[in-house]
Length: 389
Figure 1 (cartoon, rainbow, N blue to C red):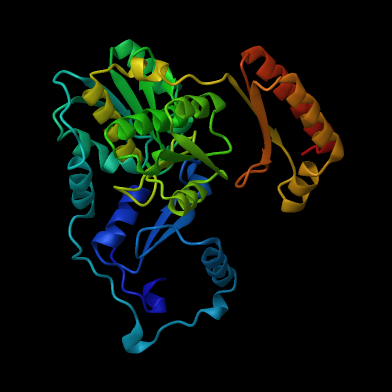
Figure 2 (spheres, rainbow, N blue to C red):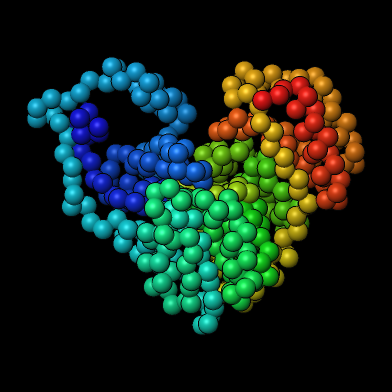
């Protein structure tokens, strides 16, 4: 398809999304394109695009491309000598990418045992090459993709298998990527989750101690745990808040001169080293902190306190109009205001529509987990009453 429109194409095979961003810059291409379902089941495949600098495209440009996809008659096919060519000799993309990441790894203590969940996705083609060459004792799981099992009961969206494996196998730390490996979550040696907010805080404090945290600031999102934000403030680190989405995080980082940002879901952007979230890079940076601090993963987790969290997803009509009507419903607005008073200033409530699924998401943080559950359930009932699926 690209060749028929006059573009020359270098196929990279199966690689993580951040590898495509890196190789677009490394190979001097005009654009990088990835077909991926990201963290979703395989049937939700979509397209991710990067410009020549390795950054995701703007909303305006993506809208123009979507319009052409919906109306292909607007795109004239190339003819004769203008037809593009497939350029096969672009080097070993996987090797170039993993060599680059390996150059960012520190010196790890001997004997450290690590387990890596590849989510039966793109990391299965790079993680063994990367981690296996760094001298650690590494075990891999969910690393046999068949095209259908990606993100199925494994990876960063399904952490139970990794948590069980860490506990039963006596590992020091575990990491889970999503299908296209731009996300990373961790598990400490006790099988406890270290989410993206904690990873952001742990890395931010380490970078500040090293004098590498520009402007003593990071970027989170409206979903970033309040306990983590308060912890960062006590360390004199300001946390800007962006809308949900790694592209929004990146835009806020660039606007405020930040080199670190991330989401609870595990997108963490180290702008000094990458132009997009990179799960394997995140794992390496976390291991570097463990090594530099001579700390166990559980020690780092306990340093970053979080408020108990309750999240409920409510199925709704999958139209922008329906979701907008729910958000503007006066009874829901009043219910949120009442529940915010019940928090007594010790937490927060976030109700928002999913950008990719027919869902409304209710998120409640409170100092008491039972209270968070009660409030979330009451708000979910209001939404179900006002907007059945």
